[in-house]
Image (tube, rainbow, N blue to C red; front, side):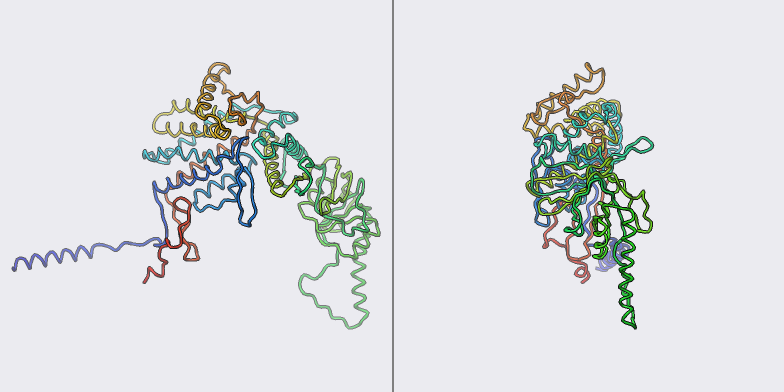
Length: 585
């Protein structure tokens, strides 16, 4: 019994010593934080990216389907423009948000290829999954992807050929192949003409020989409901939604007007803050009013001495100033937007003046052929048209409804983006998936020269590029496997024999699903669009693969679930973990 007691005491002492040696776990992060690490995070990112690309896969090509989206304000968006669709979709997963950002970047940079870039990035990530499951390190995969991207750009450079930007027919072909996948393709060459006219109008030759095309500032799209699509036109000048200040007394039509642009107000200056004036005599009040009137009269007589026909100001214009200007036979417009004033300046050759005292004769614009005010629909619009050398223009869009007009505007924006890219970088590539197929085949050959594990991901980029011709065939109802096999065979034959090693230009006719030489069909794409979409897709896939930890904390409201993990669906309220105050009890 004594021996057992001694033994039990010794065991108890050892246990207590062990317990003292063990430390309690250290809580570094908030217990309410949701966290995914390693393989789980990477696979969830891939699943989210694939889900986003599957949403808009059917909107690629001339036989694309439309998407109808109910936006937050209750309006309807009806479109097949990748960027417009993804802009309206509300997602919670951070990887999905990153994918949507790609589409916006592509739209801002080159204006077209927003659908292609998402589909391509989704496919590259999808093909990365087997490598992760084989325990290939993401850094190795990314390194191979970057090598494949360099190889792809080199091959695209070989495939491209220069285009003469003065050849209107070739430029029209490029823009038509962009619009061919859009809603407005049914109206024939109308949209392509509008886009080309607008871009050539605002193009400015720089002293170093390059061309500057700023369609955002100087090509304004005005949407007016009513009329038919055929009434759309590009004005050689500027149009804005304004009427003259005194409609009954001022002229609404002036031929060859002298235009004066101001950005100062033509009314008596008020004090910056509250101003008190103490008057002891009654006559002083009359003197004050008279001084105001004399100041306005002096400003108006200074303006009238330059004999302008039209005065445009960005600020206010008082009734008294209107009276003096009307007496001098001058037409006035007030509270014009800064952007509109800049366009008028560029179209008429006028200079915007900040103070009336600084006016000079050379500040007056004489470039406009006609100033007129017309009523379109329910509103009055002012036109400065028939300009001698307009470097700014307005595009009038007419259509049956707001939805149609919004879609036409999106299509026109893409078309102008393509025209601008060709003017900036006059190189062309064959469309219809021909470039992707040629690059895919060349990368497969190049992969044989690479040793080690990197060979597989390198080859995977080439396989991912095949998603573009595959989707084109899918969307027009062709037999996908048979068509793609034929296209691969055609590229293998042509490259070896006929073209002396150069890549061939065969692709898929998006309307019929057959294999056609893109040179004969006349489907061309701008070099900038294609290179930008491949670069953006590969680089974003590489970035998402290198994420191995997703931490999403609670929002400041306290009770809301941590968004941004799993499949992109936010958890229900009853799934919330205990808030911090409960955990402390």
